[in-house]
Length: 174
Image (tube, rainbow, N blue to C red):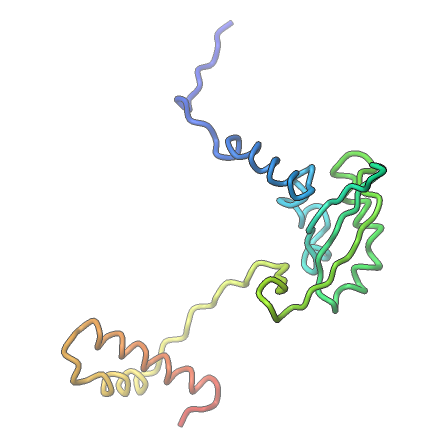
């Protein structure tokens, strides 16, 4: 029987190096299964993941079941409240047994203090900016004339084009 030689030459996959550290960090925050954090959208479903995220898994003194704390905005809390039992069943399916006995909903403001802001989805991709029209380019170049430093003049021209195009898009243009 021939043994297969490793083609990695002593290198390991990053995921295998970090698994233990991720597990320990997750357990310190109350997540015995880090998969709950890393695969939240798959576990809870896109509809719930878009309005909520897991914050903590707390174990009571009795040790009979844990409480999953989920963060959502105030406006979405009633919708999530109606889906608590379904969410609990989905999370327990990941654990493989009835680990979560209760789901607690915590609300946050969508705006305000930096710590209280909640973003439940990835930011959308920024669309390509439209090209400035030739009149804006000419006007920005006119404003930047007389500047001897090439880098500074180009930066002033870009700034001028951005300001002029922004004024037009917001209805403040001439």
